[in-house]
Image (tube, rainbow over all chains, first blue to last red; front, side, top):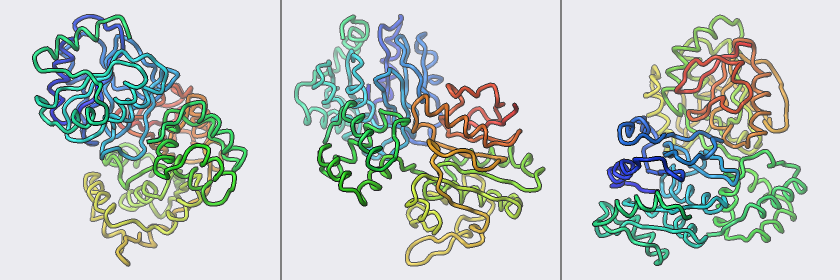
Length: 184
Length: 271
């Protein structure tokens, strides 16, 4: 799941949906300032009982775990099911970049249950989520009409018009059913 | 945007090794894939065109290797790291009559100059020698010149203040032709030289090694080899500094170090 400005509160709500063990890994990429010290697993500690981590370089990707990309590094996923950190240049002035994570996931060969893109004020993520869709996985974009910042979901829909749209009224039910579905 | 597949990347790694002798095989594949794809996109080139260019030799080979290996850095990157060095490490270093420090993977010298300034402000610079190494002759020659853009200097100055620098960063450079030139005094105990962490060995014994944001370039096996090299390059009770998000996990050397700063990944060799 990727997002930027306006996505933090949504992510918090999504984490609250995780009330029982997850059949998949759930990875959040949220644009944050490099000096942002708050650790999201600590911040969200009371919202779920499922394990939360900020993955380190070469950590193995586990199911039933929620991961958060750390500030100032891109978070990549390798074919060996490990996380890789990368301090190369920013995409859309962002590190972590959502595109970087999405594209690496699409290329890793690891089955992706779904990719989702939410509110944000940059075009990061559009390329990546398109690549995941073209690899045959399910992709969802928040309806720009009710996104706090429209640019990110709009850019994704502009780049590829076959993403499924997440509407305000059933957003959380839908996400919950995707998280706990057993297909990929 | 050009998409590159992992199999194509393996082919590319083999061709680069045959052409230039430079061996990427120990590098983390996901990062290489991303960087190689970005290189192709930036130069509007297909993989086969790139290989043809590489085979013709010359500048493009170095360009490509540089693009895939360059370590972006800042002076006083992670300011709290320098605060921690000052409070936790400097007093140990003071006990040595001569202090040797290795900045491994120094790129254009930002970290090395920061280290020189820190040592100067703690009164240790005159008996210190900083070896700063990188695998790219091109970035080293820029580091030797000690010239940085004024735009970057603004960020570096903010970092310097956050790192509790004693003066102003501008005391350490002068401006010429719109660029910042580090003062010669700062460069006198600073040696920049060529060293490839994946191929070259131990070349001295150090009281401190700073190798920040370099380990994330390597895959698991190569990373273990580099950890061995750093371990063997450290004097007993010497310090190892890793990047803010790099730990000794999977290094094979967890038992040989004690943690000085958990958050900033400063370690001391204890056996």
